[in-house]
Image (cartoon, rainbow over all chains, first blue to last red; front, side, top):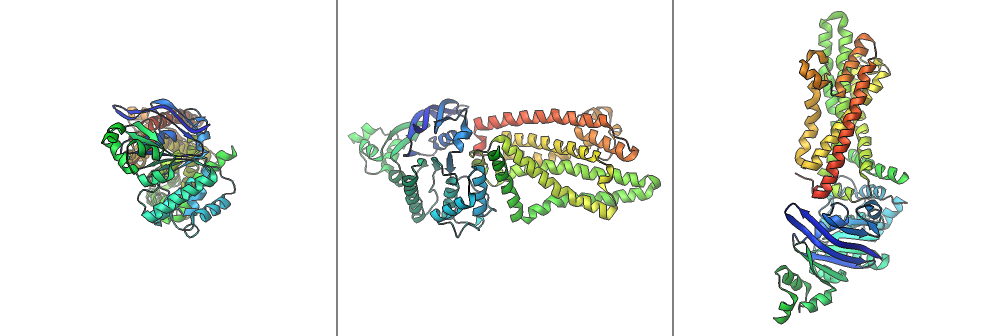
Length: 248
Length: 266
């Protein structure tokens, strides 16, 4: 069974077509990247996968649950992190994690918080208000929040946006290790090509609401005759087809 | 059911902790009710000293009115402001992608509303007892039904306001602050409905508050319980609450369709 199955998913806001009949699957235990420029439809797609947004048409199954009928069963088994959604600033890190542990019906809450603090090196931060943390610390705390329920599926929207290279690398290393140890499925929306190349087994390239290409990073590099994914991204963003690029 | 309770408690814990971390928020809860009680307490004492034998009744009517109206106001604000705290902290995205059901969110807001209302009204009631020798409990057990109807009214108005925020975004926040104040002339807190023009009386009697305060006046000045007014208040509350729930459900689904849950802001 796949962790995510999306079939002919469409989202239309009046005249604007944000997502245009996309279909894809994310196999269990894989990390799949959703890559595309601004307005490509990545965030809209993730919002529909999370049940935050109702599709205009199409079907979504997450961890075997039909999101149109049974989204709360799926939501209990997945989690989400985005630098664009904040945690309450006045609450300490431990209090924030406690809140989400209750919302996700986590057992042995204090033990879980201690475990996450060990894994993400948060012990020095637990008693500090979330609003007083640096961007890198906030990212680690957001990751801890997204792992509070030991999710089977992790949806990450630009997890290393606005981080310095060192912290970004630390987060990526941690995600690699976590996926290998837990078998968790990860869907990652990102602008960062190095991140996608490093973490993702499969990449879905989005443009104007459509999946315009897909494959493993080496397959895409070969198809576009490029040496790094950034050039593939630019080729797609600037509408150069794989064959055209190949002929250059 | 245990998991539901845990999720509701999670959100309640989040807001209780916020009060622990922010004393101005706590102070703000009691500030206005105490201020109102001070102003109306001295005003009623002044009037009472001028009208002789009826003075005690006048004080009872005015201070009972102040406390009960604050009960409605605080339960309304307690419910709506708790929701707005989630908008201000940009935390709604996390809440709506958690397994928290909409009815659990409402249950948490109701719990916080009760807490905020108690923190606001109890100090004002104590002030009335110590400064003006007015004991609101002297109204009798019927006070519970009066208060319950006003709390209920505060809730459905808050639910209506939240529905408007879901529909119109954060720009509708100002309605939360002004809605109940705007209805106060119709609530007949300090004067009987009969002093209004006939057409305004019809409007006023559509509000449960007008029936509650008519009932309060009958209890304090004549010592009788107007069950008819209480029945009207309860019936209207059920009617208005049903409408507010329908509006909230519709707006919540509309917000999930148009993407408003992703970016409720300005």
